[in-house]
Image (cartoon, rainbow, N blue to C red; front, side):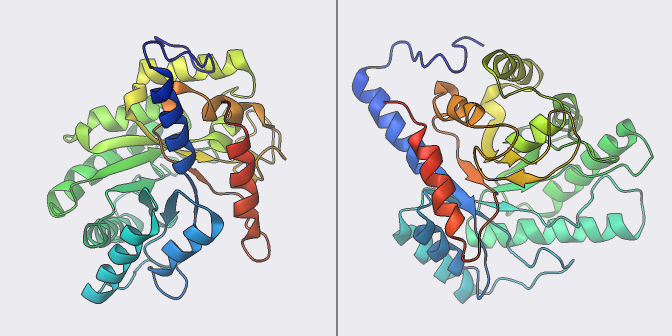
Length: 308
């Protein structure tokens, strides 16, 4: 990497520019928020928790089919978002979707569900969809990756009104899940007929669980050097900032509060002060607490890590 992460060295930036970038970093912190009671309520919840950005599901995450977003609902969401001061919003696809599945019922339902996700996002003005690459279910990684590429070649053609990007999320590597190595994400991007329509969402818990040692300086540098070589840091368009309940290489996806898990505070300090990632939106997916009060607590802790 040209300017190594955690060095804090932004060569050529005047001090005022650095201060402005630091401020914008804080504004690009947020959380995954609920849409209970209507998707427009996600904006209010984000503001209440002190979010500068928000991530949401556009439908019930436990059901295959979501309702169509009406014109009034879309207008209210857009109006609230514009008035909120929230800088960005991304969607996360439902966990039922598996575009790496073999031809059959699950693959058919997954294609329909992701197509509808793209359609809803186009209506709402959301231009980034975070998704898990899926599971090959024993058919092999190469086969699963090919299926994902074929699925997106179809989907991008079917929904031209969605002009944004799909952000492939790295995974913890449980079972036959794809995406636990950067090479998988690279293969999907390069194997698609639409490589420019993809970016990456980097999940800290998943990376650590899959074996990337990001908890110390050397491991952090090695990890993002590998990312740069495989995909390019310019394609890293979002972070999920989550501590991990389990240890390095465990292959188990269990999120913990910031600094309270096996990652500790240091990797979050590295990311929050890395000049490469100042303008990249960062979302927590940590436990909410009884009344979602822990979002504000975790965001406050992350903001306290930003060095002046």
